[in-house]
Length: 174
Image (cartoon, rainbow, N blue to C red):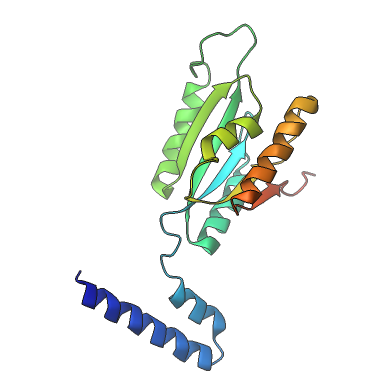
């Protein structure tokens, strides 16, 4: 597409947005102005629970639809103290099934194994990236003062990068 064609396309979208805004359809006008603005950006869902609740994934997918970006799941799996191999051998089948279910939806699923805190690992993973729209946590519950400080540090550093942090607890089970 030539530069002139791109310019005319942007001008047409702007004029269409102005028409909708004049008619009082502000949300539609906003959609025209920000089309594909966040197409290459991602919402990062971080969790350290053994199983990810479908409600949490659904919430993150709806957030992606509203923001116009994709979803990336960062799943921190706890490594047993006696286990020295950082591989994911024991949990490979359920993780492969989850990945197979999420892949057609365009979701990037990254299981990570280690003894550290989720907050440290998410910060290491997303700290320098500019394609993260926001970070969603599935009820991050720190284990002790070390993880609590890591969580506070991570939230402060992500907010300094203008990356909002959302804690999602979901609905209580009855």
